[in-house]
Amino acid sequence: MKAIVQDVYGSADVLVLRDVETPAPGGDDVLIRVRAAGVEQGVWHLMTGLPFLTRAFFGFKAPKNPIRGREVAGRVEAVGQNVVGFRPGDEVFGTAEGTFAEFVCAKEGKIALKPVNASFERAAIVPVSATTALQGLRDSGQLRPGQDVLIIGAGGGVGSFAVQLAKVLGAQVTGVCSTAKLDLVRSIGADHVIDYQHDDFADGARQFDLILDTAGNRPLSVLRRALKPRGTLVIVGGEGGGRWTGGFERSLRAALISPFVGQKLTGVMATERQEDLRYLAQLIDAGAVTPVIDKSYPLADAAGAIRHMRDGHARGKVVITV
Image 1 (cartoon, rainbow, N blue to C red):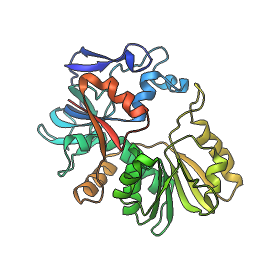
Image 2: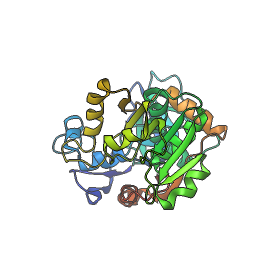
Image 3: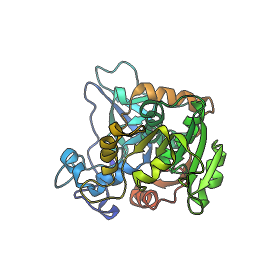
Image 4: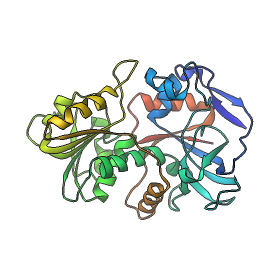
């Protein structure tokens, strides 16, 4: 099969389209013929090996798994002897390691039946980003109906799902984004939008019950000014910062400060679960959530897809078709 492979850490230039052996499913695996694969920030981190802290888990000198990609949508080709929930021909979506390829093996608990009303491309951008948004709002943020929620990075991959999911959960939603993404954020349900290029959401004019920060580049002191005295800040991932910890030091600092202030300051490390994928599929089929695709790339141009995702201008998400 053809796959996007890297032998060393580095920029998108290290990615190569290569013929590799098709994986064979183990007893608990589902072999998927990939139709589309989502592009999310984790792909960049594993490609570059940055921050260096990630290498302790994924390989010091080179990635343990040389094939990139984690989000997937496709058809089941074969199942292991212990798999009971899927059969060949099923259309599925979820997460696996090495989805920038023609075939990938996924664990049964990491996939679910694809939303009927979503194409493979739209389904493929859901598993990591929408799950992160859902768990950030519902689990880490403990969002309740009627609360005022601020989504920073509302026009991006996680943010575009967070706006819609916050509305599903009954919140009043304000989205923060660039001028170019204002219309998108309005169209997916935000009650209010703030253009960070012209306005300061932390000017004290308004405070929020919950802030979900997907942008990863504002100091905690700024974010706390926009938060109610008993409000909750949820930090998604980490971007920027140093080469050792990236932006994840903000989450660490938040955890240290939180016990000593009235506000709850926390991060979220999402775990893709089948029950959440099923819930998201139901919302998509009901029309309550619409996956937003900015641009589609062929498998051979996975490097271009990652570059486009990283430049920060994508409206929604980038997807690779196979």
